[in-house]
Amino acid sequence: MRGPEFSLGIDVGGTKTRWIVAEDGVPRVDHHVPTLTWRQANYSDADCFRLRQLVEATFGGRAPQRVVMGANGCNDEQALSRCENALRRCTGWNIRVVNDAELLAAAGAGRGISLIAGTGSIAVARDRAGRLMSAGGWGWLLGDDGGGAGLVRRALREALAAEDIGMPDQQLSEALMESLEISRLLHANERLADAPSAASLARHAPAIFKVAVQGSKAARRVLEDAASSLADHVGGLQRRGAVGPVFAGGGIFESQTEFFNQVSRLIRQRYGLIVFLVRDAPVFGAVRLASGLQRG
Image (cartoon, rainbow, N blue to C red):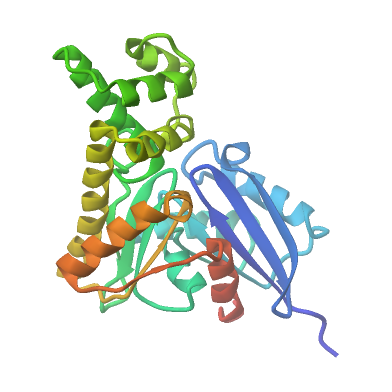
């Protein structure tokens, strides 16, 4: 009589890494850690060894027979292949690595375009040959418009520019200062430079949504531009051959219903695509994909 089969689904986000171990398809272990506890480089051998130790310690060290991992930052086939090869070499797992955003469509039990607005933002899909395509996902220093880090970066620029011309948006400036715990908005860069990261920026995003509802024109402008940018990520993939529907997820979409509705309307109006909000955590998409992975 064969023993139970263990499959492992891992979702590596910019902030958190979560994994679920399923025994004959039934989840048995559900665990998460901050991504920075193991990923110090870009999926180096040392990173992969640390991940293996963390994961296998949660289910007695037994090697899973099938693994699917969604990898934040692996936005093309070359990056996916490097990550997958490193993990195979360092863990011995029978593993398939996909972009972490791809887990959304799998979690939504469908195929199409995945759109994330969380700490960062990205849209991904597969072309007709099965190759990964992405739009956005440039990282918090350069882009991630519509994600939490991008929203805060843009809001700070908007508020500071308004102050420079003597026409400050008091609601936005005061909300950002309160969230950042600073006495002057000009101190924002110094405060954020103490521990610069996407997460340290993104945690101030709720302040923007709060004052937008209260009437801040600058905050509303930031959100309108962010919604347009996210919609255009989807449009760019559609022009390159991606087919809908769109599966949307991430902390910003989940917590800000009106913002999700705004992005959804723009995608429907501009590109004729239906958008579904996926409330299941992406890690469940990894588990579903792992359950269909052939044994290596």
